[in-house]
Image (tube, rainbow, N blue to C red; front, side, top):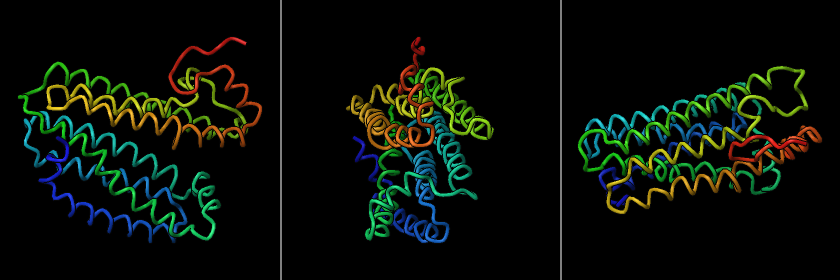
Length: 265
C-alpha cells in the first residue's frame, strides 16, 4: 500500500523539512504580498519528492525514469507558469485577495496555515507517483503506454489552453470579453479539464499493483476539487465580475468543464 512506499522516504523527516520550506516561503510572501508563492512551492516540493522516489524506489529502473520524468515535466511546466504569471512582477491573484478580506483579523494565521498545508498536499499527490514507481513489473507494459498517452494529451492540451488564454489577455481590445476560440470554444475551463485529465494518467500505470483500484482516488479528488471547490467556482465568479454579460452569454453556449460542441442560440 501507499503508506509502505512512503516509509523509506522518512515521512516525518519530509514533513518537517517541507514545513520549514513553506514557512520560509510564507516569510518571503510577506515582502512580495503574493500568496501564489505557496502554489509555486507546491510544484517545487512535488518535483523534489518525485525525483527522490525515482532515485530510491524499488521498482524497475525504466519505469522509475518514465514516471519520475512525467512528474518532473508536470511540476516544471506548472511551476514555471505560476511563477511567471502570478508571482514575477505580478499583483496577487484576486482569489487570495478575496480570502484575505474574508479572514479579516485572522488573515496572517489563515495564510500561514494555507502555506503549511502545501507540504502534506505535495507529499500526498507525489505519493501516487512514488507508489506506482514501486510496481513489481519489469519494463514498460501496454498499460503504461496508455498512461503515457493520457499524460501527453493532458500536458499538451493544458499548455495550449494556457497559451491561448495568455495571448487573448495580452490584447487590450479583448478587455471585458470572454475567450471563445480554440479550446475555449468547447469548454469554459479547458485548462482545468486537462489538469484533471493529467491525474488519470497514473491509473493505468497502477494496474497490477495490490489495491490498484485505490489509484482512482487521486484523479477523483482533483476533479471534484477543480469542479466544485478550488478551480471552476472561483474562476466563474471572477469572470462574471470582470466580463459581465459577455461571460453570461458564453455560459449559455459553452460546456463548463468537459469539452463539447457549443450550443446553437
